[in-house]
Length: 440
Ligand code: SF4
Figure 1 (cartoon, helix red, strand yellow):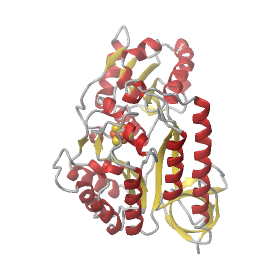
Figure 2: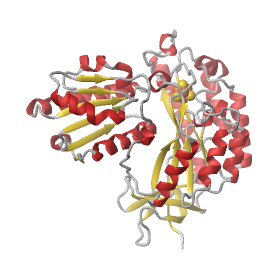
Figure 3: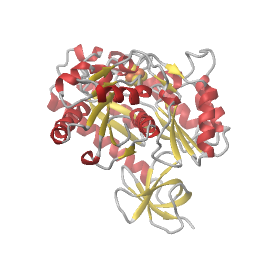
Figure 4: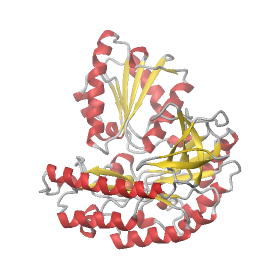
């Protein structure tokens, strides 16, 4: 099978990390990365089904690739990930260019499936209902030499009514803590200094292993003890499962970053109940207050959905009130889009799309103004950043992230290299980033 592959990824960090595993599996079989579809013998799409535009992007790109495949019929196209897991054969009906559809549970079998597609008369489809080999056990082709994702669990036992994840990723399965710590030790010996622990709901980590202890807090402490790892992040915790022990561990472990991404989704108790989130807005605010009290300098971010079915102006106002009260450093904001197969997709939705767009604009304006004022508070102060590399925004600068995850663009300086941890004096602020110079 050796040749060149191109991998295109849609969706969340979990998918980005799965793509590192897909690349690792392909490279182990001798494939090398191609820089464009024209130079690729194999194009793999790792898909997402959380948002509508991810499917539109996939089918748009498959349409463009169909003409390339007409010129080079030997080129193979494979589609994996959440959308493939959910839609399976429908994907083949919608695109005749696809040679292989695989899901979220069989990445380990990708080379064999590609061999099968090579000799098969028609497209190959394999969707499994359960994971045979946890992707975490597969080789990974990491994008960064000093920063890595580490999967701690896959799947989710919750039932948020807008979310398709439980039906495509299955029930929650936690990795053994010893495997996670071993992986972190290996990464540290390879030069990695920052790990991001990944799970759909990291706060329920280990319930399927033991269930009685605050296991995520224990895990944070174990990873904190790994020599060489100076920054530990995690995503995403569920507000209903954020326990005091986790906040204590965050406060006490020197390597755990002062960063909490806690998706609230709405500030209306009525909408939170309809979303099946399992907490009220007041409880959410209490938890972030506890976290801020225990962890000085905490950076707090969230996810918010606007225009959930039946959201009234009063419900939306409750979201704005919560945003004012919580004063998030940043927020990922989305207009609700129904995902077939979820409970919310069948709900009556009388809110006109233009009203949802207008609410979305009001929300982002508020989120951005708070984010800007919080970033302005940092002007004139020193911050520690892990340098990532050249800035995508301005090639004359280099970029890095604070322990809180804030993006900082720094005037280029010969003394700084990617992977360095340096102190920067913040000189300017925008809603989504800071600027500064190396502190002498
Ligand atoms: S916690 Fe809710 S939103 Fe998150 S993956 Fe599970 S069902 Fe989806």
